[in-house]
Length: 193
Image (cartoon, rainbow, N blue to C red; front, top):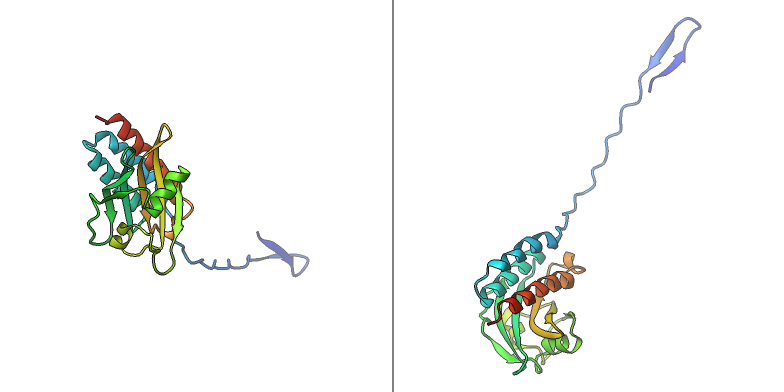
């Protein structure tokens, strides 16, 4: 906008507008990607998995990548023997938990999931409780575990554990794992022999 100022009766003089004030740049915060973008595309690949072990590995790897989790473990749940068996894992560390099995009733995390039939979040400060499953010691003492059941017809066929997900995803971990658990349960029912 140009402001006109009269200096005498005959000639108006133009006064230039003030120089723009430079904007102060706010520090850039890293945006948090939406994990569902990664999960949706990757879980579609379950259609091409040739075995339960391969599908479990795909689910574990996808969740670990999408949630930036330290470790993800996929267990099958044997309804008759009431036993958990780790069939898929992904994450940091040098651990060998694939094939580990144990009683679901004696497992602190699994028993909570099976009793509630919904996701369970556990936070640990310092040492793990004595009742903690041996796999948590194998992967290193976690700060948090989100465990989600893969339910079909009111029965838990599998449990997915997300260990130490990125804190920026705290509000999305259970929902993201539940989405993958639902797709994994569908895979298990469609490919049961």
